[in-house]
Each structure stands twice: as structure tokens, then as C-alpha cells.
Length: 139
Image (cartoon, rainbow, N blue to C red; front, side, top):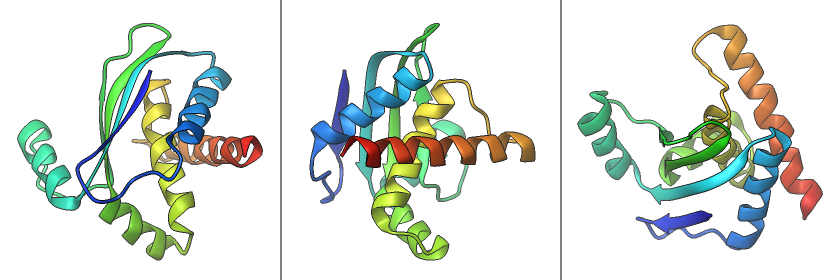
């Protein structure tokens, strides 16, 4: 089950399309869907989580809490819409594309991909691009 929650005025235009896309990401990685919660929020909301739970006093676009067991993917993915908007401008991409990148990033972590080393980050970026294209193919 994929749930979408909103702690800001932003809302996805068609949750069903996003849900199908996320399920297709998991399927393409030979993973099963458990329960995923996407929580869309603002910088202040996500900053508080970052400080309270991770002891990081910085802004970020995404924080994820992974509850995956084996191949059954579950977790809570918090996304700051303000960071996504700023990153889209910074990287000169459409907001929608940057949102897909961030949404796929969280799920890819649950599938076992890392991004701490340069090599891992390169693979993560490649996987994000691959998964973004799945959304466009399905529409």
C-alpha cells in the first residue's frame, strides 16, 4: 500500500499515477510492496525531523525511515516541497522531474542503493534517471 500525506498546501495531481509508478519501480528491482508513506511537507517541518531524529541541523530535500524486511519494501519518506522547488531551479529542471527524482531516491535506498561514495552516488543518479523514465512510459 502506498499512502500520500500532506503537511503543506502541495498535493499530487493524480495519486493513482504516482502509486502505479512507485509500484513499477519496486517491480523493476524485484521487490515487493509493503507499506510506503510519502509525507510532503515544508522546510521547517523536515528540518525539525532532521534535528530531532538524526541530530543534523541542516535543510534537506528528503529523509526516509526504512522498515523494509527482506524483499518487502516499507518505510516513511518525508519530502520538503520547498527544497524540491529550489533544487529544480538550481539544476534547471522542471519541478515535476525533480519531484520524481526525489521520490524515486527514497525508494531506491530501500532497494539497497547507497549514495555516500562517488561510485555509489553515480549509480544512484543512474537509477533515478532510469526510474523517472518509467513514469513517462506509463503515462
